[in-house]
Amino acid sequence: MNTSAAQRIAILIPALNEELAIRRVVESALAVLPDVIVIDDGSTDRTPQILADLPVILIRHASPKGKGESLRDGFREALRRGFDAVVAMDGDGQHDAADIPRMLAAARKYPDSLVIGARIRTRENQPNARRRANAVADWGISWGCGIPVADTQSGQRYYPRKVMQLVDLPAQGFVFEAAILIAAVRELGFGVVSIPIETRYSSEFRLSHFRPVRDITLITLYTIARVFHYRDIFASYRRSHSKPPLVFDPVVSVIHEPA
Image (cartoon, rainbow, N blue to C red; front, side, top):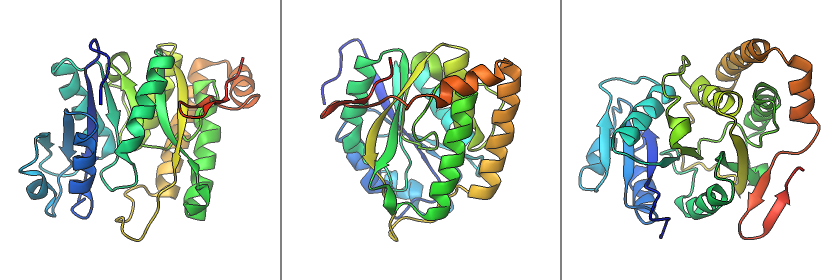
């Protein structure tokens, strides 16, 4: 697709044992943007072999380091190559590259924001335990950000260059995604806008590497620490829970746009 001549944007795909879906995911990404960075996080299946003939930037970890380190290495590579932004998406097939043009349209309308592909449509497809865990995370991470955010656990995100430069935040695993969201809002003054995407869960996808109890506990502990770090505990709660999050769909116009 055509993007602004001033913007160089890559698609970033962390992958760990994704042989069932990775080729389809990467080919669909290449159909949207020509630059795709894949971080193979120590896969022991055929993931790297499946990608061998595709025109991607492939970085391999000798052993699994977690999603946070995969994103970090992807950000570092994107920064080194001079990209202005990346769109991250998971390698298991749950994200659709066809949603990326709408994410880029949202980024153009809200240039000082992260963009999240929020799993709002067909939410009933999400397993009950995962839906409850995500609701808890949205409640807490929004508080940490001091603004309301829709689907804080979605891995489909548009990260501008300034946000990628937060690469050295001290957080690991899935906590890194919460950490960079909070820091982008609190430290850089960025906003967060979400576009609605389909909720995709199917027997064809491999089991998630996300463990709701363990990972939500770690995310919650990190977020509580950040809430106390910024000190405006009650004011940030009011700001983050007194109005709906900003959700924008370039096709059907604004759904919620707080004043």
